[in-house]
Image (cartoon, rainbow, N blue to C red; front, side, top):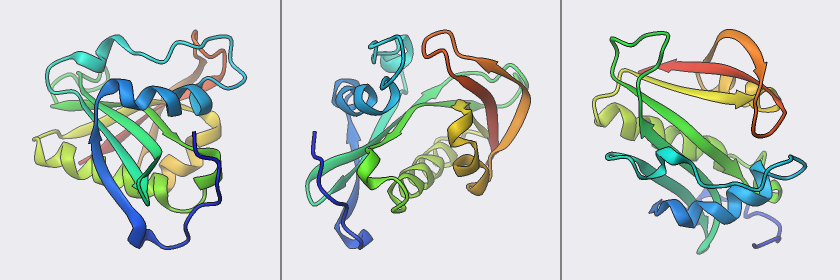
Length: 157
């Protein structure tokens, strides 16, 4: 895993499509750090229509996300995509890489006909998602896998 200072210019960034397995190293170091679990594969990773995106910076993968066609219980009548495994390497957090990846995924979800994107977001990431047009839906909860506080978030497309 690259642990070098991030580039300051988005010109070296590229959104790339990945396999689920290519997301695993970043999921492990970002999403499973200081949690009781090291499981980084999700059952939904291989459902038809699942899309895994990343951001490469000068050829180095620095952020990943997975976009799963999956109904949202709060609006089952809407075509929905669940965002899972959104992770940016710590050295690149705050540089705009995560926002660029999120916007690229939202654009692809919209192009695929989704009306809504939802996720179970860590409370520590809520400000990031709120800045990008998501809204909190419902009460918070502690995720069984990570044992960390989460809220469900929703973005209407």
